[in-house]
Image 1 (cartoon, rainbow, N blue to C red):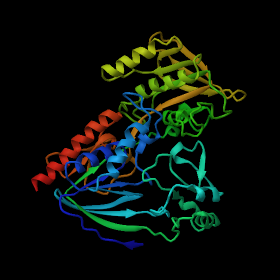
Image 2: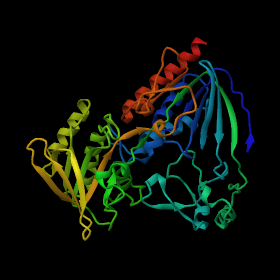
Image 3: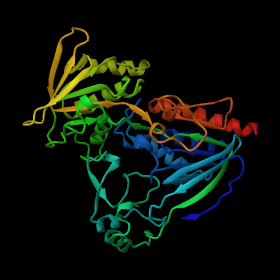
Image 4: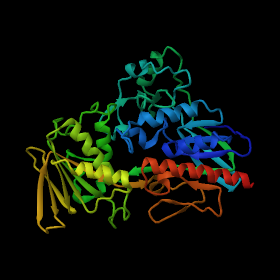
Length: 425
């Protein structure tokens, strides 16, 4: 491992996380004159938004918001972007922090033109985490079509193999460097914004809902990838077991949320996500029956309430108020029977569907990976902001469950809080 020390100008801000909240924080701070270091653990920016098919309020594809933000970052010399970067240690006090960062190698340098010849030469197929393991990608790959920075990456799994040498030999631009090593650098900053985002709750931990046990039970984020034109099925929503078009689809709300054994809080986005995904299905399958099993439907704000009312007008969308007790697979057809108790009538309901979508909850990344800094958390792993102390702040879903619009608004506020810390020093 090599080491580099960088001493940026005083008054800089470190933003940890390159999702929509981190992008907004970095851009807002830089465009009023502050130097920003944007750190992202993945080889690309965009976070969870990049994995969506569409997002509220306008049901835009990710390209709408991300492309504009990427251009603003590219055009702003005050923003320094480091991908595959992990914060290892934070020392200091508000106005004067030392941030130790590890930079992991991508084995592809700035000469990359995204020609794709390295991927063609590479035979190894690796599970595609971007698509939640529903397909594979080559050991040399572009994370997704509009990835920023626009550069291929070599998986660590092929380093030291013949495939890595083949990929290097195929590159006409000398863009593949198999000798790249991890590096460390130190950043001096006056404020830090933690925009470390969220992870889908592990549905495999919910014993009664069959995820990982039955093929035709997927999560809401898997549905986003299936519906996406750059997803594993190029936008075709099909059953994993046989690639057939589903005609009866069940949504199970609060899969892990509002449950003392899993996530005790409401994840805020799940109800609207399922209603949105009902529109995906209706566009593709006009005659499909959609069953939504829910405890309470939460549609915060007039715009979301209007969207809900529009979905309710669909005669083939059935809302069933009742907690799902179990799911049962028919081994012959791979169909799933959803068993629930109707909270209104008290009767036991059994509904057989072709595909089940679990509305899994939103868990802060920090709940599973504690951050190397003096931060306070609530019992669920969300970072608590200490405005009196200042210096370090959490933005977006690192602080609380939120949709894209709320995350953007909060990130703008956290950029201002970071600037205020610098102004006081």
